[in-house]
Amino acid sequence: MTPRTSKLLGIASLASLTALLCAVPALAQTAATTAAPAAAAAPAAAAAAPAAAAAAAPASPLNSGDTAWMLTSMALVLMMTIPGLGLFYGGMVRRKNVLATVMQSFAITCLVTVLWFAIGYSIAFTNDATPGQFIGSFAHIFLAGIGVNSVNSLAGTIPEYVFSAFQMTFAIITPALICGAFAERMKFSALLIFMALWLLLVYSPIAHWVWGGGFLGGLGVLDFAGGTVVHINAGVAGLVCALVLGKRKGFGTTNMAPHNLVLTFIGAGLLWVGWFGFNAGSAVAANGLAGAAMMNTQVATAAAGLAWMFVEWMVVKKPSVLGILSGAVAGLVAVTPASGFVNPTGAFIIGIVAGIVCYYAAAHMKKMFGYDDSLDAFGVHGVGGIIGALLTGVFADPAINSLGQNHSIVTQLEGIVVTIVWTGVVTWIILMVTKMLVGLRPSEADEEEGLDISQHGESVAE
Image: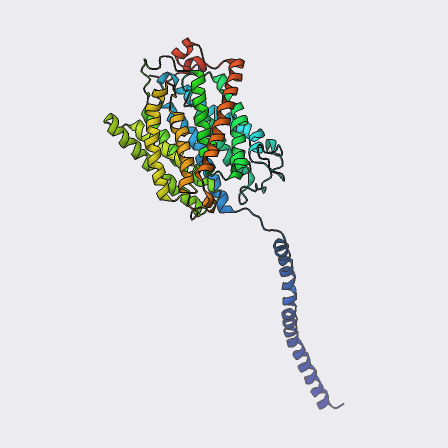
């Protein structure tokens, strides 16, 4: 090999080595580019697996909007009893009985909560596979078998815990309303026994009959939020209690004027606001029906407050604070069964009728018949509930709620009569049992001293 040839071969070898070294990064980049889609596909496939599994799983029926509204409604209805009803009633009694009166609302809240959790909810709202016409099942005593994602077929978009808690607040306020009829004259021990038995033997069965799949709902009785279940029920029970216990000591001769109407005013305001949870919450959803119930509640309440005020103004020549407050509550009561079935015009008429009729029931009817319904539990809740239940059969509008298309005042009357008979008879029996066990009234000396001191050992400072 010549020197020239060797030199040329060396130059060629050097050039080949340089080209090879330059090509290595390019080959590496090409290989990486080729491998990148494959590498990216692996985690993408892994991420897609849970999504596919979720798509294959059945969708949860729970609706967050409905659940949020029902949680709010539950709190609003609880506010109606504590502090609403406690202050409303507490301001209307004499000073020596104010603590005993607010204690009744608070103690009933605690008592009914425990009983509802233990057995009340199950017998009122549990039907399982075979609906009972007269009583629910015992499948969910102590809320057994209910989980965080369980639903009741009566409220399919909210957790059953929320539905049970919402219905619990109705079960709380209904017996608490009765206290207005016998205010200032029942022993506290008797109260606890009576209310426990009344919840289980009167309220829970009637709630089942109307709302829980029982025979009254099957007949077509319309009760959107409790005209029959709550107000007629409590009002009639209150009247029976007033008749059995008799009149307050000094009734008709002693001044029994309310000791603090400011408390009553605050309580009435809390009742009015809380009632939106009561009525609009009974739609069991955050929807247009809840909106209609809310508007109907506001219109009827205002109309009834004005109607009572103007009638009283004409009769006694002065519009009283207690009068307009009582009229507003009468409107709230009367629109309750109708709130999710009528349009605002129907609610307006119901409010006017309730304000006028309940005024005469509270101011004149009890004087005519001579019974002592201390705080007009029957005159407002019993009479107002009957008015509302009957007029629901008149003004139900299928455009608001399709369930109202077969509305009938005769069917409504059937529901009213059944409720009055069952409540009246069973309430009387419970009172007799309670009387045998612990007696119903404190001694005359204790009643004269006041229930605050005689029953609870406390008093409000002068």
